[in-house]
Image 1 (spheres, rainbow, N blue to C red):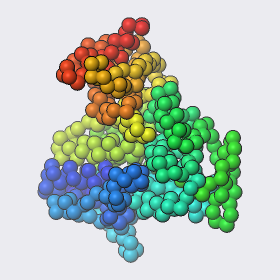
Image 2 (image 1 turned 180 degrees about the vertical axis):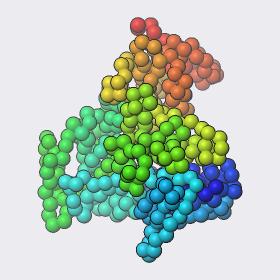
Image 3 (image 1 turned 90 degrees about the vertical axis):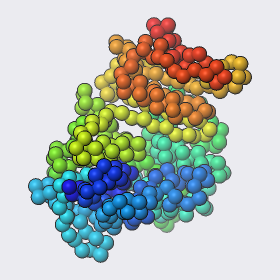
Length: 443
């Protein structure tokens, strides 16, 4: 079988790897317009560099050599300019301008998303970054900047603000929402983290919009938001992403935000074309509502599901599942499922409960806590979402929380669910048990 993958993104690379492992007789092509060295770049690489987690930005790209040894046919610096589904054929153009056609049996679209500047701001010190080259450019400007303005308090923007504050920069973090990380956490959960960022000198401007700016030559020197003017050396848009689906227009069905409509097997409206990664939104089939939310973990797991399906093992992917985590200002922040703030917009009636719990038995004399929140349906008591904030690293607990949601567990079931117990390390009841029991008690 001849399988063509468009996009050396996280999803595209994972799809190629999985397909080659499942059936070495498949002819697998991976095509991308960028250079080979940029493949699979992690967009938070700049923050990891500033935090000294890595010493070079290219450490968080993906080495494609092992896939080439398995038989991958790699075409980088080739842009796909057209898809002809009726002919099962694509047209691609090489860097030297030479075009050619390539036939396929199955086509996987993994074109990801791209960052874009605010159209109101242009200047040599106005930057976006998501790819490797963009991150390198941003790094060169950051070396001399002291007053930095970041638009977008999502994960990448907030992580970058935190890292730059550690280096003595004055940071203005601007967002149109009322709290940082608003797509992932409810406001009351995140206040402590916002206070910690403020103590580091990060000025957060919530509920704001850009309305004007001043320039000297080709450089921005001041931006104007609703409440005030801010002098700046550098303006960064780290998270203004949009799905790369222009080649799919009028070829397969798209939503109004240009993300791709897929079924539970990630097939598009054309059964021989699959879509994975950022271009596939988080979807709630019960009401057909969807959210554009680029997440690496969704992309690679979609890739594996599609590879299994194409290889003859049809595999359903849960398009509603969302699981995100980060570490900012000494806090582990994790969230799964719905937030309470967004639930009404998704047609969900919810209630919630938040508690603070000790992670260790009292006799350990370790004052380490977790702030945990559960969001649930008041009629069925089914768990729909949850959030964890702690100075302890709780990624395994977050995975558990996601599994509760996926299994449609109820609050009463969680109250009595068994967890591992070791007297020297854990309380008799896990804090998830205690949180669920407290919900029942208060009802």
